[in-house]
Image (cartoon, rainbow over all chains, first blue to last red; front, side, top):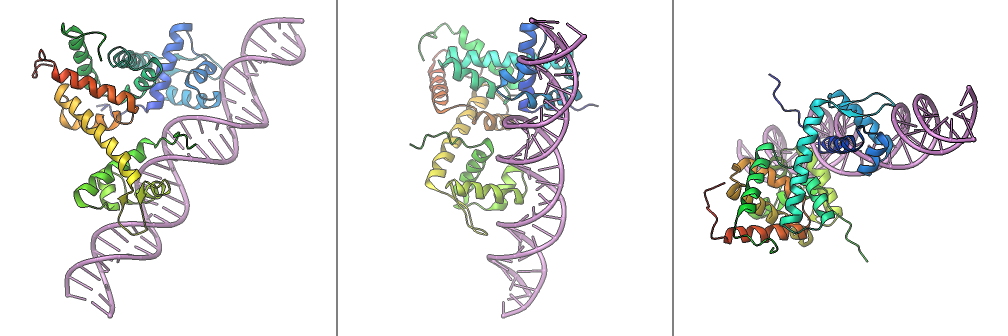
Length: 138
Length: 138
DNA sequence: CACGAATGTTTGGGCTATCAAACTTTCAAA
DNA sequence: TTTGAAAGTTTGATAGCCCAAACATTCGTG
């Protein structure tokens, strides 16, 4: 049995998330844009794309465009979901400013396992439903 | 002006937190115990202690005991506080099991800046005070 | 089509943090 | 007081991820 001890590094997860974003907006991701979005240099991207390709998470050919494999897309979407959710929690509920919320979400999204995240989600759902909550207080 | 761009790595913060724990329990920290608590080898500890010493966060002499400097202790206590708070949130409110709560708290404690953490704290305080909350639901 | 700019890749280097294993120091028991 | 085991240190390697800069490829424009 393929015991899922294959956790991706934070960095690789960030690559997947970034690629998904680009792919969504422009159907395809380019090395240059990945680099720009992640604030790293083009040269660094190549090596990481190879790693992701070896894990069958992206379709990569030298000098070609990059797309996520189904497997990669699934992971990327999970991470994206967490990011959106956490950022929303931080900015809407905690009233953290947008930029900080984004940064912090980007860190936190790698910290929780699936189960913990789901519990967090349900918790926030409950909070939002609470009729006694005053939306502009915090 | 000494602009505080000196953020510690996650790892160094973990060392400080671990040393504080040992120091509290046994007045002094030993390389061997740090290694055991952090699940790393003794050899790895030495180098990191030197780094922390260079930053004046621990008192380190070869073959000697280790203690936190005031500066180091202050940081360690902040991190410990976050850990306790986050673990409590995860286990008491989200009902995450103890071990997972501990692990997750250990990751999350490095993700938030001071301000965000304080907002999180206040938020939980509010939740706890909410008279409509059912303690055993989640 | 050809050529230069844009994009992508490679190479060599650096930094952090870890390990294994050899080596040194300390300390307590005989 | 000697001495061997425990604790600490050093050294050389490795892995991950990044950069700079030289090099290769691609592509749009003239």
